[in-house]
Length: 339
Image (cartoon, rainbow, N blue to C red; front, side, top):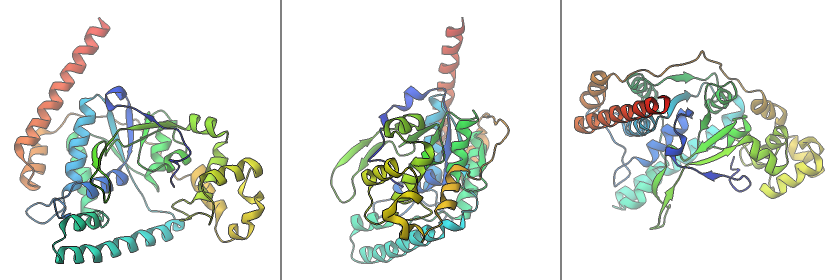
């Protein structure tokens, strides 16, 4: 669901977020990396055995960057999806299938720029990619969690039990799941090209808090979830015909709950809105014991990325040195502050 048109967001720099703990929606980040880290014709990075490594590149360099800023990430992986998400999953598969056909056509005609656009929509997260990511995180000393269902829900939960300060995702659903604070554009910040246009923009991290969203919209969290259902969620794609953000808010402010809106009574019978509401307000989550961040396994990291997955050994070593030096600076700054 896109709340972007109705919520206030504050641009922030990663440097200003030092000492925070990020609960990152792993699947969301991995799909972003699989989409944007590609060659000229849209081909993903691969190793000598043909295994896709674009996601590993994104996770490694972004995680090192976060750690160098004294930001501690924990990655949350999705568990089995709700049956109510089947329609959305089918819709996504159809989009990928259409993109695959157009990608093949573009490549056959030598239209590589066009091919890259379609290739970005064909990303598929295979099981081995998930396992490779977990291996990489372990070698980096980064904790990760397997959620019982939606990763965003457990990430949001961690912000409410004090194990994380921020939920990190591109999706606004984190707010519906009750995240105290949501950060967007963390995994894709930087210079990005607009689709189908020769224009580049700078994507900066954005911060929004549940408290500010509810206060500015003058809604309760339950009512915000109902607004989300009106606009459409992963569990009722498309929402209600003819209802945009302004109208959805007007309806909920006037009638307080979905069931009381006379104009949608018939359409409401066609979706299991009570179950969708319950997914957001009472999601399946996990409360893990306090997790820790360990030292990097330098030898293991070099073996995995450079020898097994064909990454540049020089770049990997350079990143490790950068991280080591930044940790020293942080430690020295803390000692000066304490003394």
